[in-house]
Length: 149
Image (tube, rainbow, N blue to C red):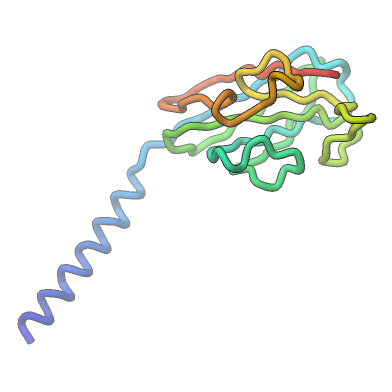
């Protein structure tokens, strides 16, 4: 009986220790900004990723978090809060008709797109998590360039 009580006591202590240690995990703020939108029509979709197998995500289904930013004077900014330290990548869409998806012409997007760490995209410069990702080790501000094709 004494041994059973001791085992239960250890299990409860381990559970309590695990619960409190996760609550003390430090989190950070990530502000993302885009300027030079071609107009102030619609909104900007900001999608945040933390997995290589989820990026790029043309249909916006595999993101970690997603926010929609209002456009003011051809610029938009959102702030993701309570993010643990880690590796992240950002994908944006200037959703001019606010349908939540990338509208295409023949093959190319009709609306503006952008990825963290990218100044241009093309057949020889395709977005990948490896190229677009950055470390978040403290509060951070990231500028994403909008690309119209």
